[in-house]
Each structure stands twice: as structure tokens, then as C-alpha cells.
Length: 417
Ligand SMILES: Nc1nc2c(c(=O)[nH]1)N[C@H]1C(S)=C(S)[C@@H](COP(=O)(O)OP(=O)(O)OC[C@H]3O[C@@H](n4cnc5c(N)ncnc54)[C@H](O)[C@@H]3O)O[C@H]1N2
Ligand code: MOO
Image 1 (tube, protein in one colour):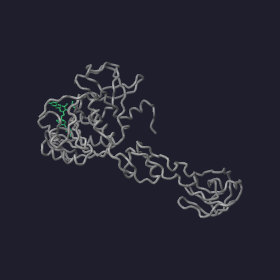
Image 2 (tube, rainbow, N blue to C red):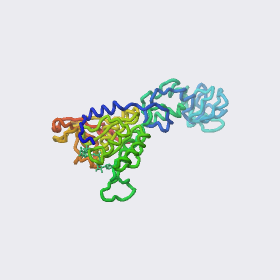
Image 3 (cartoon, protein in one colour):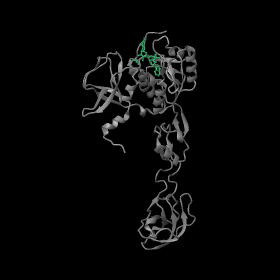
Image 4 (cartoon, rainbow, N blue to C red):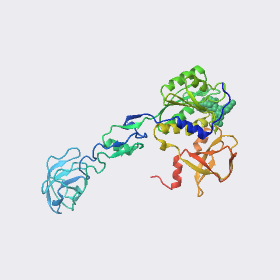
């Protein structure tokens, strides 16, 4: 077994991940499944909306030329939404109309019922009515042929509404990436299943990484963890490879005799693109490909697993889905005190962020061990402390990857409604 690693620079490793990751094929998905995906080609309006002139108010459709205050009108028909009137509106006549009702021929204005003596077979006009009052014109929302959703648009609730209003039951999108998460390790027990025996721990990584994948907009599921056993591992990986665009394994990629993931992947034809990155946490990460499946062998330490997911898997997933706009924001941060880095690797340090007059101040969340899951619940960002100079002096800025994007709102002074 290979026990020496040539560690890759982090940014070079990320470049390789992105270089080996492309957009997934375009497919049409039902509207209700399109949320969060990117429109893959321009979508055009198939007709004007609204499709017809219609009333903005409950009231009467009349001829504005007749609209003298005090005049009596005869109601000749009605036009509720969905059922146009059969009669035209002649002089001194009105059609009872409700919001969304088709404006009948002859009428050019709607008087709200509050501007009349009320509902009835006839009414007296009590308020002036200008031509075109309370009419929503055909095509005032969108015009036939307009590009309503340009390629690349994120599909959110307003885009879904617009597409539905144009009769689209499905939209062309870059397919949502399918992620399968496979934890490895004989010590793992599923939470909620039973109490732990000595030496066992609960499998938190597969839950964490499914959540991370979903948060990145992918469809993700976990499969049963595989024991540290070559045959079991091979079977589990083979099955997962058959179902995924992205396979993420956790554990078993380091130097131990029970670290069998690399070998299993090799045997199953996964081409290794890199193994080992000059990064803390996350050093033993493996990245490979088999045909269209991208494979991340992520270290088992829970913080390493989640940080590797953030820094490598997430950028790949959002690229596959055409949603590069969902890459994490990067900002410059400073520390009040010197921060040392004796790891000899780029330290993705868990920090809190605070907005000051100088900019963004980063403060370590505390101990940075790779097993300290609770530390991640306190982290707003990963401050990238380079190994070259042994750390970063007080006040000097470094790059940080923002994990909790709502902290950026703190700068804007925005309040929540
Ligand atoms: N001789 C060396 N030992 C180690 C090295 C090294 O370079 N030489 N690297 C260390 C680093 S850095 C890391 S990171 C870890 C990663 O090791 P593995 O990917 O092989 O992970 P495991 O050994 O399987 O597990 C590590 C740790 O994480 C726990 N774990 C595993 N899976 C889960 C899970 N699904 N949920 C929660 N916790 C999990 C596992 O019990 C171990 O405690 O290797 C160092 N060793
Ligand atoms: O790289 Mo390991 O992830 O240092 O703990």
C-alpha cells in the first residue's frame, strides 16, 4: 500500500476538481421539481399575459363616455372570472364584472361597486370614471415572444409563477446532481438505532454530507455504511457508483491498514485525479472519476469531512447544476492577534466573523481539532491561513470562505420583516 503522499496545493486541487467537472445534461423537469435549478435555455412567452383585457375590480363595466355622476345604468349581463359576458355594453348599459372577468365588448372602463349605489339590476353612478379605469390590458405583463426566463436564471418562486402563468408544465434545466453518500468504518452505528458498544461511535458524516449536498441544491441520499472490509467496501462502492453523478465516501482514505477505500476505488476502475492536499483539515482527500461519475474519498474525521465537502464537493455540485452563483462568497478578514500556522498546510480555520469599522474581524472559534463537531456549529467562515510564513500577523488580511451567508447581512444594516 502506498504510504507516502505528495500533497497538492489546495488551489491547484480545487482547480483540478473544477476542470474535471462539467454541467450535467439538459432535461425538462416538472415545474414543481425545478426549484433551485438553473434554466438551461431561454424560455419565451407563448402568448400575451394577461391573455385578455380584464377587470382589476369588482364592479360594473361601462362606457366611460356615459359616466356622468348621478346617471342610472341598466345591468344587462355579468362577467365573473372565467365566464365572459354574452352581451355587449351599449349606451347607458353595464355588465356586472368581477376581478379577472373579461371586459365585455363596448365597455372601456370599470367602476368599482363602491363608486355606485350598489349591486342590483340597475345602479346609480356616484363617482367619476376615466376611460380605461380599472382595466388590466392584455399583454401588460408579458408579450408573446418575450424571453421570460433567460438561460442561467435560478428558478425560484417568482420564476415558477411566471412559467406556470405561461402554461409551462415543465422547464429545461441542467439536471439536479444525484449524490450518494457512503460512510465507511466498522465503528459506525446509525443514530437512533441502538446504544453504543465500547469503541463504537454514531455515524454523523453521512447525515452531515447529505444535508450539505441538499443545501447545495443536489438530490442526495445515504446508503448503509460499509465495514472496514475489502469485499464489503467494494460491493458498496460498486452499487453507489451505478446510481450517482457524485459519490462521496467518508473515512478510510488515510494511511491505516484499515484504510481500504483507495484500493477499492482503484479496483473498481475509478481513475485517481489526486490523493492528498496541503490542507488542514482534509489532507487525505481523494478525488477521482469513473466515466461520468465523480468520486470524492473524504477523510473520516467529522470536521475534515464537512470542510472537504464545503471546499471541494460543493463547488463541483453547483457547477454541475449550472449554479456557479451558489459558490460560497469569499471575503477578506483580519485577526486582532497574530495567528500561527505550524501545520505546514493551508489551515482552513473555523472562525466567527464580526463587522468592524476596519472590515471583517475573524476570531477563532477555539480548538481546531478535526473531530470537534461542535466547533462547526460556531463557525461563520473558514479563514484560509497559509503555511508559508508560519501564520498571519495581527491586522493582516487573509481570504475567508463564508459558510453562513446571512452574516454578510450584518454589514448592510438590513432588518428582517
Ligand atoms: N499515519 C497517519 N495517520 C493519519 C494521517 C496520516 O497522514 N498518517 N492522517 C490523519 C488525518 S489528517 C486524517 S483527516 C485522518 C483521516 O483518516 P481516514 O479518512 O482514514 O478516516 P478514518 O480513519 O476512517 O476515520 C477518522 C476518524 O473519523 C471517525 N469517523 C469516520 N467515519 C465517521 C462517520 N461517518 N461519522 C463520524 N465519525 C467518523 C473515525 O471514527 C475516526 O475517529 O487520518 C489521520 N491519520
Ligand atoms: O487533515 Mo486531517 O483532516 O488534519 O484532520
